[in-house]
Amino acid sequence: MKKISLSDIAGIGTTVIVFVISLYWVSHSSETFKDKLPILYLSFLIYLVCFILVTRDELILSLNKTLLLIGIQLLSSFVLMINFQIEFLPILTIIWISIIPHYFSLRTTIVILFLVLIVWFSLFSYIWHQKVLFDALLYGCFHFFSVLMSYHAIEAEKATDKAHRLNRELETTQQLLAEASKQNERTRIARDLHDLLGHHLTALIINLQVATRLTDGEANEKVEQCHSLAKLLLSDVREAVSTLRENSELNFEQILALMIKNIPNLEFNRAIKAKIPADNLSLAKTLLSCVQEAITNSLRHSNATKFWISLAQQDNHFLLEVYDNGKIKNKIIEGNGLTGMRERVKELNGKIEIKRTKIDTTNLNNQKDSLKIAVILPIQRAVSE
Image (cartoon, rainbow, N blue to C red):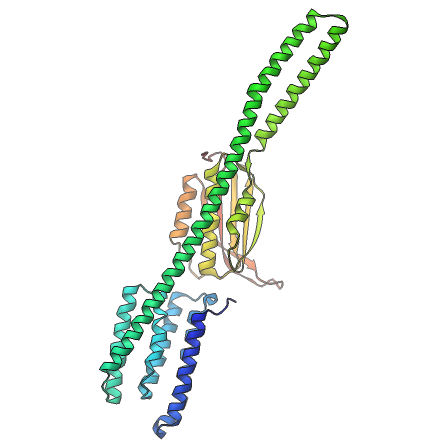
């Protein structure tokens, strides 16, 4: 369960205060309004419950259910306005309109705002026979201010998320380049050892072989010893060169750990059992990009608390699997993130599978549907950089 944000606390607190003041107002009004106290209690309760349900991300409600709750929330505030001549009730629609930018564009939100204001104050004027021009202008400004503040808060949150994502991408790319640079240096050393030292040792061995034929006695024995030592040294050099070349692998798990460091609200479980060639940066970058996009989707949509990453090498391909313990909607809709993932995988002649999977959420084997992404990349088609 995620913590309640300050904006949620402000909305709930303001609603409660408006309810208390409204209750006080009704208690000191005519008997006509006192007879409608059950309507007051029920309407405020419905309004508050809808607000809490809509603003809680962990519920993962479908868009249709969310819009239905938003509509019921607005309807409950209209019920209050129709039954009680309370001039400060538009505060409830100010709270309500602050939610709308999360689901609609700014232009659509402003259109909805004007429609609600027109209907609200027209009904209020008609039912209670009061002039509402100045109240409409005043509360209209408050509503508009609420919309702008919500919109800018959403944009700031998106910008912050993007900045964090780009920063992780930069750190990951730097680590990849550092690993590639290390491997390039090892390869250069191996090549120099082979080309220079190996060449001179080979020439020395040949000359010592000739010397063994030109000498005899004790001198011949010493030459034979030198010849054996030179051959042994050449064998050691070749073994060292082979070792340097064989260890040409990226430390993928270390790079992955750097990428997922400081990601909030997720506990990661990693199982990296494949070795990525150091000269295959395209493959490594594609795998890391897929993991990052899956994590982003998990944080935005599933409300997961645990995330699994596994990478294995099977026959002639790499298999990357990522999934979490979050919830998914009834229908999986691929957005820009998953589409971009497919495009990157396709560039390396790989394929991607997106499906539902059962995840145990407790020790009691309580299973639920989660999203699982499997990326398959052929080893022989890897692209070197």
